Image (cartoon, rainbow, N blue to C red):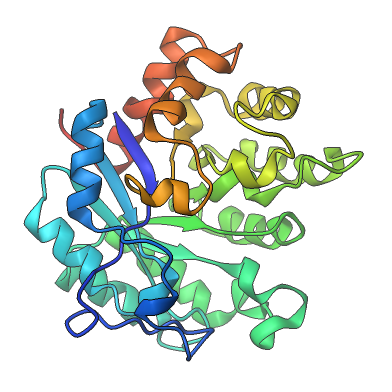
Amino acid sequence: MVDTHMHVWADDATRYPFSHPYNHRFGADDVPHPATVEMLLEDMDRHGVTHAILVQVIYHGWDNSYVADCVTRHPDRFRAHGLIDPTDPRVADKLEYWVRERGLSGMRLSPIYYRGGARGGDAWLTSSAHEALWERAEELDTVFNFFIATEQLPRLEEMIRRHPGVVVCVDHLAQIDLSVDDPQPALDRLLALSDYPRVWVKVSELTSVSGSDYPFRKSYPWLKQVHDAFGSERLLWGTGYPGAARAAYSRPTLGEELALIRQEIPFFSAEDCALILGRNAARIWKLEG
């Protein structure tokens, strides 16, 4: 079983500073709860989760040292994705450093923070620097995951079309707001990516996108469309935070997250569950049982 979306952060601000790139006043006192890798391992072991993909939290900014060190300490349990400043003209070189020198498996890119002209806008998505980034990603056999808004998906599709060898995982159903009267136009932008065989979608963050409480039943008709378009072979499970930090962020427990896939979502078969909860991720991140 593989949790493909796990945020952890250090409890040693001297060794691993909090250098939030969008909030320079952010510090250790602004973190609502500890979320160390030790907490994660305890939570995983209690519920039989064998592996996790650590995704650099924005709190530590572009310094991915903590998640890289977690992988070095526990290479049989973790892979990790870092963050790199997407506006840096040397973004491809930064990717190569973190992959070759520090052992990361890929990067998370977050155009959602740049939509509507925020922070200089999201033109970098299809820039020449990102053409080089995608070319380097294919050379390095790395994985991208995208925290992206639905209106930005067509531009992501441009890059996917030009670089079909790169594995792309779309976070949190592309943050589609399923509480609106008609989410279909937004959903259709995500479904369009099902034409590309190296695109996966994370069934995650239903807390924030579903418009309903656990077990998020209002989301099921829309989620069924994602399942039908991508197939269970291209869906991934991810939960967000370790242990007691889940409650601090108003997220379900790990047991509830597992039950959601195994028992609550009515159209997931036993084979679907095996793929979504681990086998797909094992293939992408080259994990061994």
